[in-house]
Length: 282
Image (cartoon, rainbow, N blue to C red):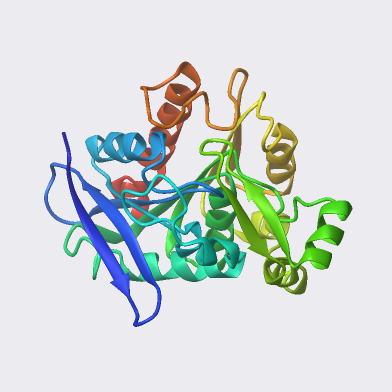
């Protein structure tokens, strides 16, 4: 079983907590940074499993909690309600930039080949990974699972109530916990709509991109993947999983891989191996 080590990045304000899963091979290795989605966290369901499989294939795998998740390592509930309620998409990008900058430096020194960095993002984390890949030439390859094609997923009635009440209650179906999201998050989304345009990012990014999406996903419909795929510049590929839902059948706590998750994971490993192998650097 691959070894793991924890890390904490602190800039005197917010701290980023994460886990590195290390391959058996020594020295700098191609590295995958894993981005969880909305209401997700680094220990949810398939994320530790994915990290372990990637390490077994020779990758260093880094997963972390976005500061806006409101969760500390080991949490099963949102314990920092204030952080969750004020989490913006720009804040997610700041977190991801900090992780990318620290990879191989403060995070897993000597175990990261910075010329071979990849991103794997799920749902909202897939949208965030896409934005990051479009903004940085340090990202060599991108895979998204069930990614959103827009961050603006709120109806007019919800927005009106959000502005009127100053917050929008978000229910976590897994835990039953209700956490309010402040209206400043909506204001940020609307003020920076152009910056957060995922279809524009799909056209702008150059990292080879595998888009994986389940055809029975009711949380983020497969139409989102089709829009991303239609907008994406080459090289890109869309993999539709006929029986895949939003989490490819996986639950938390993780009970083992499903056929859809296995298909997603096999395609993901193959994509990373294809574009992050040694000869792909030239």
